[in-house]
Length: 318
Image (cartoon, rainbow, N blue to C red; front, side, top):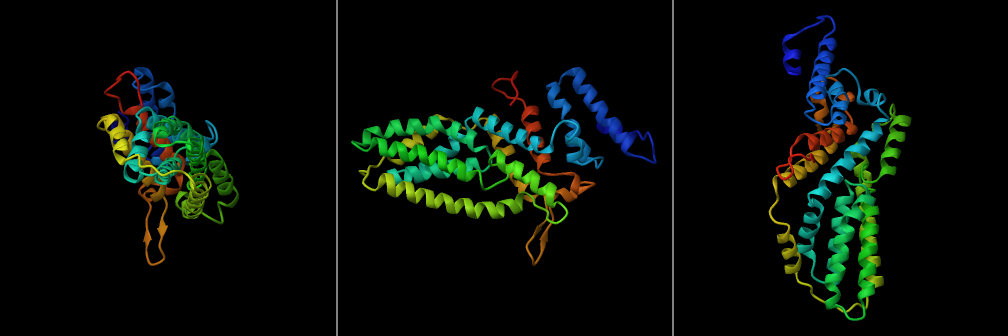
């Protein structure tokens, strides 16, 4: 209905924004009356559509609700909830462990890499909570292979989980809440002098985070596993655990697709200047590119999670 309104009805030829706003109002009115989605989801339609249509900037619209950085929090938390709900985090961790997990050192490495990668995009606290039960189960499973070194292996695994989650949160602006607050303050303070976007943060954050991860693994490995009796748990254990998850259902595929798309959109929103040539960001496709920021991407991902129905529990959205 809103699209028809925008294409065929022109309320004021001198000011097309009036027709665009009327279309958004009609769209929201239909969703509110029919309750096609949650009322709260309908309420955030302006934050997405006003920047897309070139009417107002995300920051300006978001101020009518709260600070724009809150929407970056919101989108990240919704992604974390969906990933945990459909066990995508377990699938990622078990896949990595089925490749590298064999000895105590490689099991620790696989756990730390899995945690690091997930924590890049989800709050480090949420990542630790999500993987904690899986790591405890892994510690319990390896007890049969260890004699007097159970406590050392358990300590290394749990510390590796906590440290790698914290380190992984450094790599991107959405990795941990303090990053997002610093991201906000920096942009407000130096917005005129330096365009500090998602990609530029990651170009600084990833080298530091990867270096810390390597150092942390070496320290934990040397300190806790120096005299640890070697064992081979066998990659089959992780493969069996992975098989128990079954095939990826449509819900998990949707969550994975939205998760990957969100990452790609964050990195490619702004122009990437490689010196020899420049890759234009997708924000240039919109009427006013500067109206769209990283909060918009997070909010769009969260909106999709609410709109796509679940085939398992049709009454419950993502």
